[in-house]
Amino acid sequence: MATDRRIPLTCRLNLRHQWRTRSTEDGNRWKACARCGRDKETTNVDVHLFH
Image 1 (cartoon, helix red, strand yellow):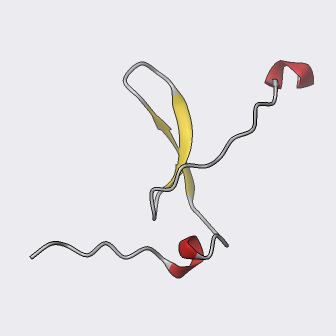
Image 2: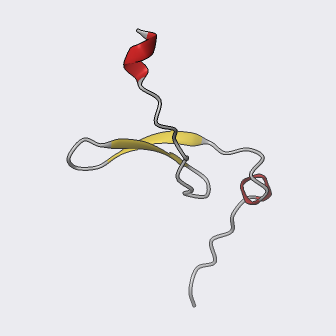
């Protein structure tokens, strides 16, 4: 029997996620929800403009 992974209602309705920073072996980072696994969409904002 396959395990049934249920996605929380707040994630399915895109109301609330628990964003966590993830990284690859080569050091790239992104944010993904710890509950449903959805990747957070990022914008291409140059962070150096604000420093």
